[in-house]
Length: 482
Image (cartoon, rainbow, N blue to C red):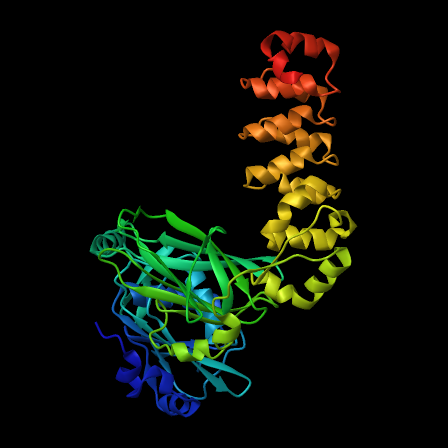
């Protein structure tokens, strides 16, 4: 299997080809063969997929998109020849765009196609070096058919050949994708998906997650990944992970960034499969990809080019810093400190501790900021704040002490107390049972609670109806209530 058809036809690497090479090549008559095909630039990109899938399913080959119009050699000869000035395409402008179109229209995803883009007059010429694929047969999704290269033409493959190609597959074919979701101005949610595109079961599926140019990253939003000189690495080694076709692994990470470009790299593999990697430089301000690399489609990579696009590691600014607790004197002091040190609070360098005496003087935005970034303020806010949206958020907190604070807050509304009626924590249920805003129907539920301390609290609630109090009276400890 020849994997460098550019060398075969041009005597040089595909990435060294220039417009002069293409013009010189077509200055003489060139035949289409089983290993080379020409597409005029006037054709649509969709017209390439049949030929590319045929090359993948046979011996590979070279495709030139932007060639002169092919003509039949003779009236009785089906072979096509090309000669003359290249006709560039304006249908697609970059090799990245072309590669995306190819990978979206051929299944399974083709691996190892090299593309050279060449500026030519008012358009582009693309040279595609397509290898024979170990994952054949590849299907052209435009028409759902499989093609092979035969007698210099891309032909519909008979069923027997398609079946034979399926039987020839020997290795699992994994694909990794990285998805971004903005949480706020400083945080993104990164989803890593690894899927098996082949019919061969992928065993021991594993990957390494690497992030650079950020402040910190958490696995699933909880477990902190410890940094090493500004780089965050997590090994997801799956000795028992097995994926059949169509199944996937999906893991989530929460990234705290610097509002500047940052790098995410996924290196992934499985038993008997290839090691591949995907690298992305992400711009969080514009929510867009700055640079992308997928080793399944490209062989050459200079990681230094990627790292040059993110902020350099500063051991003073980015190094491990111990959290410092701040106790503001009053609400104004708290606001002023946040304004001056917002970035450091977000990074976890400062943790503000609020006081119940002045917590109510803070506006909703500042209060919400403290809930999100200052864990030592959450209890006070839970017990005192009057902002219903913040109370609702804290009612769903993982900490039972925070939920208990919400249940004790005199400003907590009925519908939120109703959500906490069946809370797993005893102290939360007791606080709801004695709260004056708790609805009568929820008091009915709590009066039937298995824990006598909850029933005692219902009895103590001044808003509990007499009929309900009489109903639960035999089940409670009256001495305890005195």
